Length: 480
Image 1 (cartoon, one colour):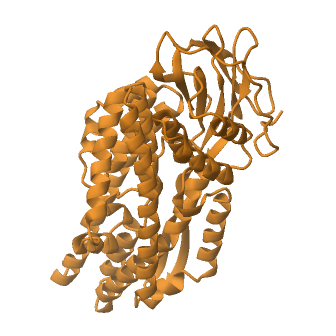
Image 2 (spheres, helix red, strand yellow):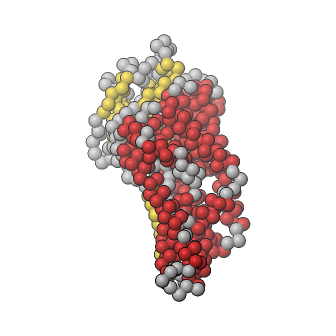
Image 3 (cartoon, helix red, strand yellow):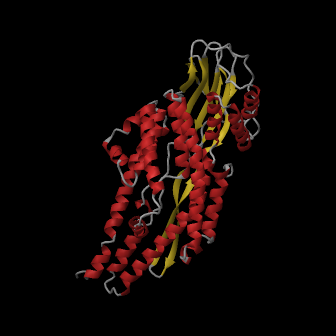
């Protein structure tokens, strides 16, 4: 038996579906390998994987290039390769800005995504991608000794927040103006409403209008370093309102209010802990006139955190600090996802409706049964949810601050939930007006502190007497 030309033509729909599926698997393989190495705390090894041919190809991809670039830039930063990280983030930023300048999604892109897989859409980045990128670039420029550019980047994070609010409003308006009643009706179905409610629960600590408290903190400190203390006080007041549970912030505000000049020998410890939520597939299987149809959308799944906090001390006992939460990235990611979820469901239902129409047309005059097989396979291979998200970012940021001890030696160790503290590492902090110490712990990683200095000098004014650390509130007290 031979296929009729019309049936053969319709069966060719399987070809792009299989190509999309193959490309998606390749993408996941390359990124998963990098993330697995990174999650084990082997930052240098993960950075080396970026040079592999497969990953280099991913960096150039029209569909997934920005995702590859964001992962690579973060890995390079945590491996201490700040200039390369800066350049890779710039590359990702240029790609994101190019997408932002597009008036609308292209017709060809919409057709491919509607008739094919949602993963065929180019990765355009999320709102938290754009804001966190600027936060990480601030760290890069501090590491490279460029305070002016660091301030530019943290101010750009604020601009990104305003743009996120505008884009979110525009997408809501576009959905409301749509005349597709099937897609709009899906947003009111019990299953999707429940998924939306679960996502909003994950965002319980979210901050209004896409705000990231880490950007607010950096803005306050760097404005003070620049000599703009009144503006720094404004930012700190905002931050205390965002994170009322952090006991360090009111004390820091009192200090900023009492003196215009930065306190010499100050150390700020920023602890980026855990791994941000990953996306898993959530699906429904529904009977239709064309048989069984699978509807799949992404769902957020938080990653367990193995470490409660970071303890910072010194051999003489002069300093003893425990970090407290500054920002829940889990909540930031969940709030962003909750804002995007109706659009994801809307586009998925448009795609499902289009594929059902194609299946019905293909089967209407078929007496061979082959069209049923072809369209069933077509719908199966193009039903995967888009699970792409930036994986190498942390679940939370924590903060501690104090004075560098006379010896300049700090001990840093993990505070483990429900158990004893881990072993410690010792580092020597060079004399400087202000020092940032960054520690990244994806799971339970070796402690590899990054020391970023502002106003490094051997001839600083006399140090003030050390002050005791504030008591954490119940919300930030690590479990004993």
